Image (tube, rainbow, N blue to C red; front, side):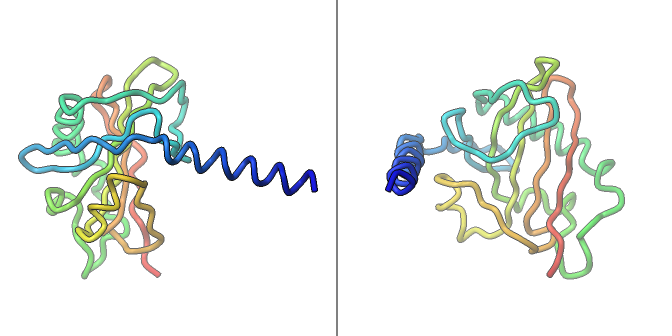
Length: 161
């Protein structure tokens, strides 16, 4: 009986947290569009040396997108999980919808984790929840952009089934 009550309370707490989360803020530039999630959004993601989550603005997204545009080709030189039939992420960067999450690392630097997905049918859903897909090759990928150090890291491109 006690276990059941505890489970119900935990589930109620999780449901209340999800309900309390604000809708993400839409941000768009010349070659990008996506949603910014604030620190109230519960995400099961962390970065190396994470100190905390961070609030980010559209101005900071513009900085992150410029770093991404200018430095992605070097990090993506081996074109992992981008075989024939899947997009080359550098050439098709403008086609992806995005989700942005802010972090502060142990050096006090601001890092923006960008989750990328190709499927426009998921765009409406993407303002409410993290889009997470297994497989799908380079139609789904994510990267960390350190806007303080002006660097990219942790490029992760989905594989194929």
